[in-house]
Image (cartoon, rainbow, N blue to C red; front, side):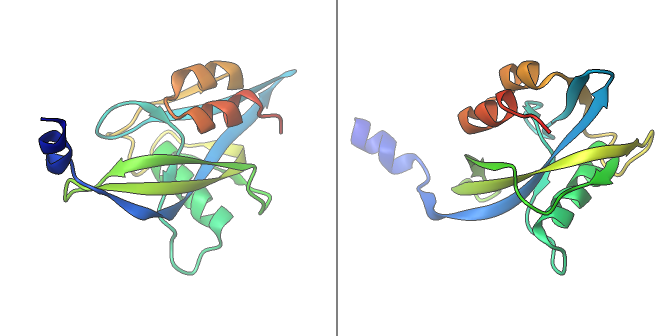
Length: 148
């Protein structure tokens, strides 16, 4: 029975693909806050991320995703602050392993309107609370340890 069940489950693509993510952050007095957004389909709390954008460096690609998905702009420093892995369900039903490089984005502007505003919610919170809200174990650790 277990073998039949395993045969029906789509095989994951073995080689991880790469995505770039932004961790939007700001200082409010003495405290640091990070922004989470909801995913479009499952409404889980995540950080803005996406596939590489041609002709953009990885940190610029992450910043573009932050604008499109969260409506924030700001500055990245060019070097990833960490990475995490997750399994993405593709339209075909297959699962793709994904390696996500995370770039800190010091937020300079929070827009009232942005491309995906009708599809997502956003939330400012402490890094510790953000770590409790996300599902991915490696992302939890990255958020819990975050210090700009």
